[in-house]
Image (cartoon, rainbow, N blue to C red; front, side, top):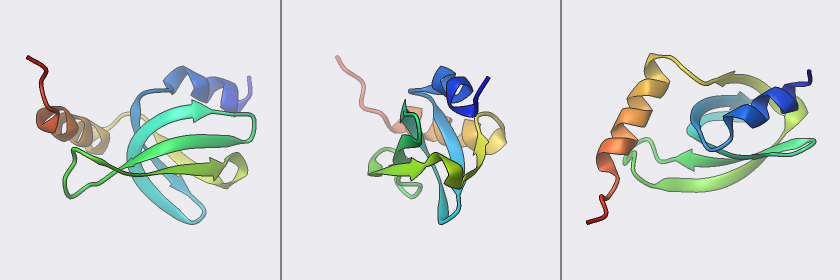
Length: 85
C-alpha cells in the first residue's frame, strides 16, 4: 500500500502536517497522486482557515492524525464554530 492510498482514508479530517518548508494544523481536503491539498487553521483564532496550501508529497516529513495537540485544536475549532439554528 502506498502512502497516498493510506492518506486518502483521512481526507476531511483535522491533523498536523510537517513538510520541508513548514508545519501547520489544519484539515486535509484532497490527496492526489503527487500532492496534498490542506486548509491551514489560524492557530490564534482556531475558527477560521488562514490559507489553502498544496504540498508536494515527497516534501511531507510527518503527519500526526491523533494526539493531545491535534485533539486540542479540534476541540477549540469545534467550540468556535457557529451553530445553525
